[in-house]
Length: 227
Image (spheres, rainbow, N blue to C red):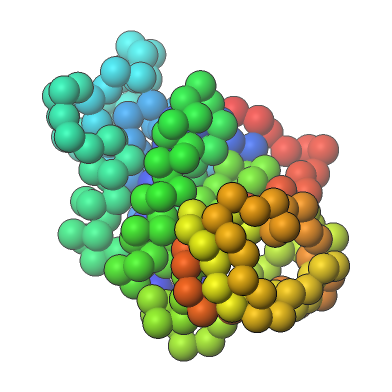
């Protein structure tokens, strides 16, 4: 996974800067979507492009990062700044996207949109991680959509709290390496059965049909920086 061509998209949601987050974005190319530029300093990174309608970027940010290549879009447009940034990254050959700042902030609609956007990208074979530093999310899809022929797995720490949020009926869901494992379970849309589980060993997940997001609450060290 980490050998893929990776782009980090800085979004305007709140983030918690942890060493885990720094490691995840290390050596990736960076694009800032509008107000997401505010995270660049805390993460010690410099975007190669800053794009959007700039309605959430104040004058201080515009002066501080005015030297970065910019691409302006009108506020009355048919795509979010996040979607535009992802599209640019894909045009540059991105195989993996990290949407940093995908959760939190003042707009729950944007957070939900990032989840559906991640599922759509994953269906096209693009690996996607959603993160705020405190929360991480991954699309869960049937094996046929995955560029990896194995079942889904991730490096969540033991004891980590997570939920599987279905965006449709889920058929044949199997989970191992968790406190409450499942074997070939059908989960109707809207069910709370897959909420509030915990990692217990090496996590692995397989889905026969449907689409979902794995949303995890990652333990945060007390020394972490909130921005």
